[in-house]
Amino acid sequence: MVVGDLASGLLAEVCIALEYLQSSAVNALIDGREAVKIWLLTQGCSLYPNMQDYPFLVTLYTPLYHCLAAAIAVLGMGNNVAVAAHLVSYAGWLGLLGVMVWIIHRQAQSLFFALTVPLAFAVSPYLTRYLVHIRPDLLAWCFAFAAVGLFAAKPQTEDTSWPVGTALLLTAALFTKQQSMAVCCGLATAFVVQGIRFGQCLRLTLLVGGISCAIVLALQWATDGTFLVHTLWYPAKLAADPSVTHLGNAWPRFASFVRAYWGLIVICLLGLTDGLRRRRLHLFDWLALVHVPFLVKLVSTWGADNNYFIGMLIILTLRAGVFLAELATAKPAWQRAMAYGLLLGLLPMHPIIGERTCVAFSSSVPNELETLLKEAGDGPILINAEGAAPLLASRGQQLRFFDGTETQFFEKVGMWSFNRSRMAADIANCRFPTIILAPTFIDPEVLLAVNGTYFLSQKVSLYSIYRPRPGKHYALAEPGRPAENVRPNSVVSLVRSQGLEAGSEFGARFTGRAEKGEKGEKGEAIYAVAADKSVQTARLVCYPKVSHLGQDSWIEVAWSNDGVLYHPFLRYEGSASDNATALFEPRLEGAFSPKSAEFAIRLTLSGSAKLWSGDNAPMLLSLDYGP
Image (cartoon, rainbow, N blue to C red; front, side, top):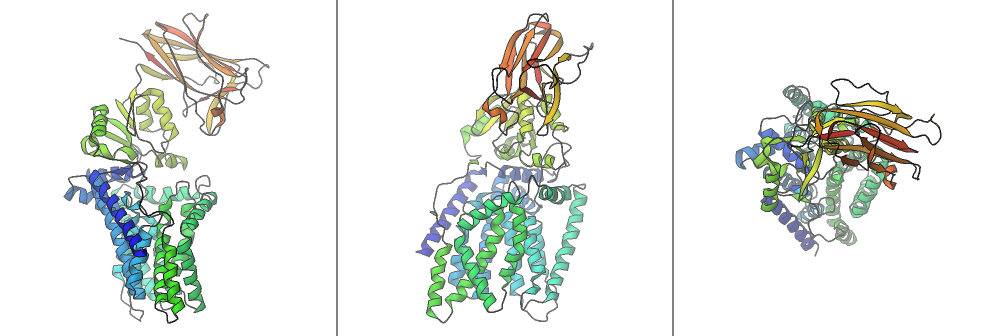
């Protein structure tokens, strides 16, 4: 029954993998950006941009996975990067399972446990459906544990030869994903395990260190100094930022891990206890202990996912497999029975065969893809990389990519600024005929900028397609600042500001009533508009906040042709969402028809009403001159 259940679960994994391969599907949350980076490599571009121009992408990973996928895409897949990336991921998955079978069989001489325990790992909760992701984890761990297998298989003698094969595999793991550093450190210090000699560990460390340093220097030179910025300095800054990385993030994840893998953990603890009873520390016990501090730091990060536990899961699975195999060959019959009973604890506690749970972008849905391509148009397209995969084959040269997830953290640690970037200027000046956004963790500042000068034209499947708002766009001066005089070449000028003051809150600026003002006095700002011809439609966008709801707290915007009689076109009295974490919601927008080249706009704030302002949430006026 155990073998049958595991085999059916493995078959389900293979079927899903083939489905993704056939449809060139890409997971809709994050994997699309890795497909974009592989495509960029096929075009001769760098994985590690300087963030001064397009693409605005952040690459945390070292490059081997992407390079292998790019080579396969160019040489054998007709530049289909999604299929090539899936093939590399599947190869990593198959290779990892094969390595685990080999290690357990060599360590314990039991083919049954060497097959069943890795199969239980492959269909366990954190690994189910993971092979369909376009990520380097499985390939990196395949290299790392192949190195562990070679290291453990080497005869423990006075042999002074250099472990070149093990060092090359460890280096390959490091340059596939940095998390494999935990395994490198474990093997470098494995001389604490009985029978492993210090010289063997030292030679391995020197080889890996020397090869890695040479590769890092070459990559740093080839990328004009950006390789370490992306792969070392940025992760280090994230790890050091307490608002991003703290133990409060880690504990719930560890609790979920223990609930999902309590059976595996119990078996490994029994194995550790048995070894200590016999005064023997197993290599896998040591690797697990070394892995713990790395894992704690990793899962303390805000965006950590279940894949961060894969390395530890592999170590625990290997330890469990060896321990169960040793129990099964013990002379007391009760120990043999115990081994097969404990094996049941490795089975998943949920049905192995289930529906596919992840949403994916697919290039094989003709109607949706045809509609998307038609709406995309012929000009340059700004798109978040997470959703760009289906468009790479036919529109890749038109696309201007940005990372909707990592760029906001790149900015958070002070390594980039969206508001000072070329992308922000291009959005403000409507230089893209089309902007396409796919659902992911897009920086709120990017959304604010897009909504300021673009409007949502259409939704196609998971995509939102934006077009430029008609007319010209002007950012209004903050009303709490000193008023300007109307200058001859100024289209929109602040000519009066009374009873208002500017301040800051939550890292953003706002304008509200002056605290020193008389009770009940309203704050007022007046803007003069002097266009070069008659304006048919004017549209104002702003971001209000009413801290304390009540009839005396409100915001009103009115317009006038003569500066005497004003016509209100926007009024906001607050909502419960004003004090939510989404600081710049709701978005207030209104339009009017002055049919004149010169007119005025009056802004009135009463009570606790405020307006967010500045670069994060600018007040924007759009002027449409009509035909």
